[in-house]
Image (tube, rainbow, N blue to C red; front, top):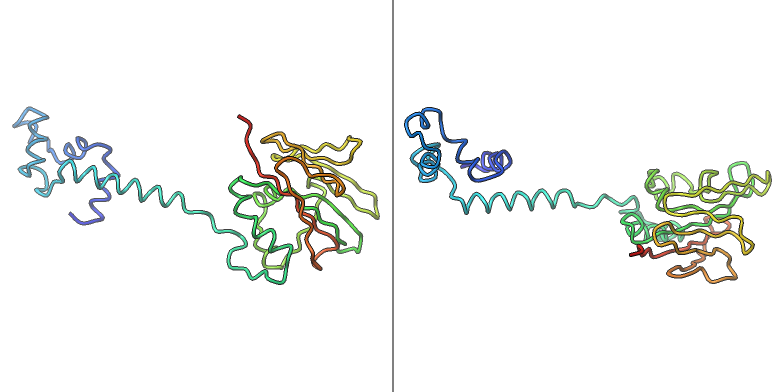
Length: 230
């Protein structure tokens, strides 16, 4: 039995009995009048194609096919930062180092960026890295063909010249803006609060990292290791 035919038979027949039945003809049943006997004759090689798999061989091949299929479905998606030389770009390197953990949900990161837009206006904002990864193609950012900047649709956005200000909760964070201590973000998975005040502790399971870079006027990354509540 060639590999292609064998694989086809493994996929088309969920049980060994179905596999045997596929080789029993109407003529066989007319003469034998007994399904179990017909199956036995096929298994012994007296009916069918004469090259019938034993039950153990069938089950072994079926298991191997399932494992092969599982391996294919578990192949990780290519990271947007893969293969990119980011040695001289500290912000992009920091994001690349976090990309896999953020994509698989083990880490959430809020990126604070302050810089000037194309009009020369100073803007700042907080970006939900996981949401941006999910909704945008990040390769142009890692290839430096596009510059990562806050948008009015991000967690928080502020244009210092026009005084335009927006805030938006995301699937990962709730924005707490009406708070006397300043802007806060609550992680929706474990309900922990991330405090972005540079003079305060960032909160449980959270860290604050200021990136020394010339790519932007200022970059700070707040990382939160998510722990789902039991």
